[in-house]
Length: 222
Image 1 (tube, rainbow, N blue to C red):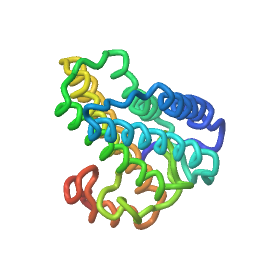
Image 2 (cartoon, one colour):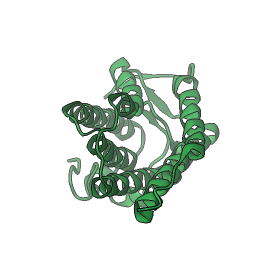
Image 3 (tube, helix red, strand yellow):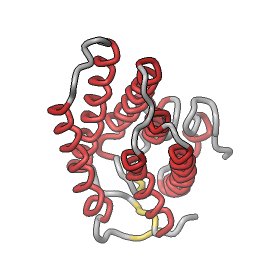
């Protein structure tokens, strides 16, 4: 059973919420510098949709953070805490690597991955709602929306969107960041599930019938 800690400082809210609010602000501000590619209206439309999906994602996370319920338990693992924070903000590393992929069709693929991944993650946040957290915490079992098929739709969506950013970076370093993100999300999911199984009756049965990141894949044995 994972170690636990009682109620103390809400470090997830104190540390992550201001940064996520800043990400929401920067995403909104990016609309003012958006340039239409008049020769390629489909590419322009997808690029705009990608930015709007990102805005919706961060704004919904901030809203969920502000209204979430107190946790029943919080993991005391410093490693799990660090992995959760790192996985949340690692995708910003793609920006510093620079975007080198050009051409209409490669960018179409990038935007489709970004829209699909961010949209799926946003759908997950919408249904997680007041049970949302970044660090491993137990609140309630959510089985609606994408949670009917996978236990971690936020992580699945973020990985799919990050795959689009990896293609946009177009270098080996982008692949390294994506693989590191995958490893962190898998470890993060594992730590969360230990906590949820220990504190939420019925979670083990739920985990046994749903996939982890992909429907039907990674069901937990009872």
